[in-house]
Image 1 (cartoon, rainbow, N blue to C red):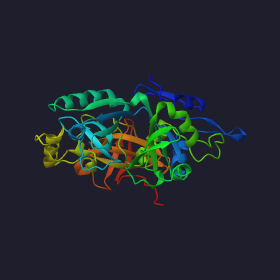
Image 2 (spheres, rainbow, N blue to C red):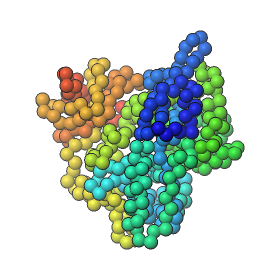
Image 3 (cartoon, one colour):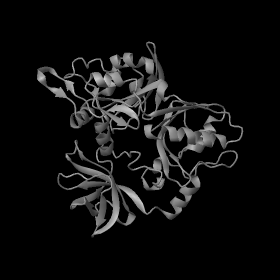
Length: 384
């Protein structure tokens, strides 16, 4: 398995390491506290992020640089959302589609300059997308573009939670003033950082890309209080908490809500899709555009919804959803919400049964769980 530049930190702090998309990553932690107590586990790490601040290693995410005279044109052809009107220092969530309008990946697009872009992709899709990017580049005659995979040359961490900006303000006055989905490149001491006000938890916070050789110094800055873990504002959080946090926030996960066979317009991610995005100067549309136009005109049979489940039993991915004994959908993600203290789930269901308040049943194979279609996100961070 590949190891991130933060790997030793995980080991030193009791990380329970697992294989995630070919990377050895922490599922949860176990930190020793004074008095024989410990910190860690999905619930403790989840609440740490919701109430204070959590540190995630997301270095397994792919970071692909796209530079050159025709780089903007290539990025426009690669993603579902218009990017030509972005400003320097802005990033946007978008989808990379196949010709059928299915989803190859969901990505973050960063514009550093008109001829300098960065795309952050999911770990499991990095190799697939690198090949796809090359194929699309080759379809643009005479394209002057350099595509570079910078994943193993850099690290990426996320610091998320309501008290995170207070910690960051101790060494930067600029970063806390960033708007959502904006980023800044900073030279901090001897480190060059790219800091964006983005995240995958439903909380405020930042994601930081930095040279892998600067990780130790960055950890000392961001986690300077971890020597006294009981009092630390920011503590480590693993993949398990990241999943429950994103599910509460109604954020889709590749391999669950998003797949190559998932029609993009069934996901509720319309904000990330510009169906009528302008053609380029040669009349070329982005990959999957034609399929999306047909999908928009004809509709999709199923749509993604949120479910609140009665009782204390949780659903699982691929459990069926039924109405009156007839199957109308399938669970894609589910958990016992640590914040709400009740089971929640996402599911694709037939449009006819997707209205808020619709009563459904979740088929476990050994019985049924009563559930109701509810509005997403399940949780929204209170405004300051």
